[in-house]
Image (cartoon, rainbow, N blue to C red):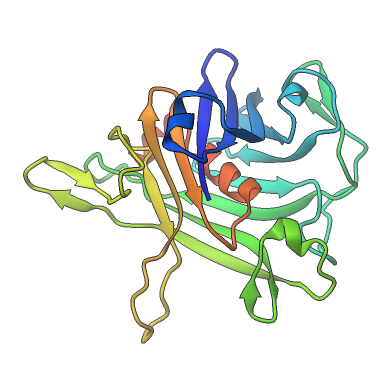
Length: 250
């Protein structure tokens, strides 16, 4: 799925759209999800909703959140609607506070951890691209991965952990920079640009199929392309973790 994210720096909001054509990058495509970043003490948290109005007013459109640790190098993804039957909820709450005043009630009683994103420290090496890895919970049916949103309705689906690592870029001698092939989907060089691939087991043929890629097009516009078994919610949360300065990782 080819999507794009628009960022509003003034109010720390992010909007995910489905991009059917390249021309839609200059306009609004089909709206999918929205998020707003707020600070809770020493941590940052992103509330993710299915309604852009839910970012500013109390609503029942919040579907999950993304929370960072103190250094901003590790993030936890929580889905407030269990992604598969039998998922274990960590807690049951009637609502959450969003910012200082706005309340964002849960859509369901589930509060399930569905993924983690980690950025590797690079204090002792030269400045370069960020290195990241993530682990997400995806339902699997008869050995075939399916979209988590559809998997909720499959009674015999089971959870499976998907591990993804950032693809190592190659050094371009002529340009004197690190490069990845985004097939024309990324226009601006940035440390935020990344591609995630699944690691290959020893003895298996090399397969560097990109499951998720994210890159900069303009100052506040970014592409987000993903494929199964990731859902739009999981892919959006992973990309949100990449915003902001990470001095320990660059």
